[in-house]
Length: 58
Image (cartoon, rainbow, N blue to C red; front, top):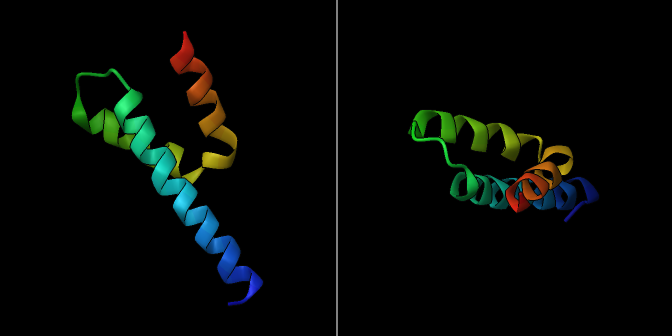
């Protein structure tokens, strides 16, 4: 397994996990907005997922 494949695997696993956690944490009644926010957070999880965790504390 090359270095690129390892990085891609870690990024993919992190993206899926952060998208699922974001979907469960959001409180919007509209499911489409929840899915959209989970998708966007999942795609940009290294920068945006810590913000989701901080907002979920308050």
